[in-house]
Length: 173
Image (cartoon, rainbow, N blue to C red; front, side, top):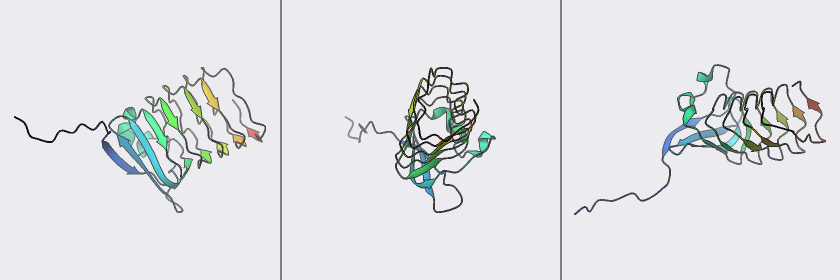
């Protein structure tokens, strides 16, 4: 007879937590990876900007484990290169507090099929979704005034993008 405690919870367990706050200003942003592939970003302020060298991201060794990204309300920017080449991401939830999407933020997220950009985002950076070739749907709200160069280059699945009237700058494709 076994009298031990059995965990019947289906709750995902934390794999690791990282501070991904931008260094300057009053930013307090953390990323938590769960064992079910959910990557939750929470806190307040801006995320750090990373570089082409993908190893500059503190969660670099875990990028293939990230399946779903959930950014909580309070986070105001997605840093440059944050999800660069995270090819396993299938779903992204963005908060209403978001105002900018950085350069190469979702570059080559090849499993991503759709994304809804929340009202409040003002700018989409260079190559933000470049080579996310399975992206078939994107909604851009009226709040967006700037879409930088090559933001959607290589997104072969997109058959069209409705451009908001608020747009004052659109880069080259």
